[in-house]
Image: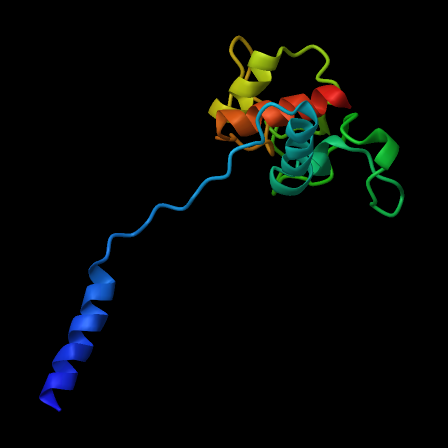
Length: 142
């Protein structure tokens, strides 16, 4: 009986002392531009949710598919009036007026070199560079 208790404690105790493995981070598909664009589409629509603020909506609140990422009135308001809260999200379809390096910096560092930081509710993203490059590839394709 004591032996089985000691064995049980050794097994459960050893499970706690095993080193934790770091979670695997998926990188974007390399080489294939279609796969890169598809990864960027996934990130912009499902993860970073760029589509939610940068796309106009119909009277029922549905995103207008033909105008996705063409800029829109901000769908959410701040908790109180704040002059630092954007009233409108800019057009990012094709990324007019932005260089790839600027957008990658915005998505990886939270700010573009030589420009004012984006207004809230734009979050200060800290994407991995390959993910930011995929988002740029997707938005350039729009």
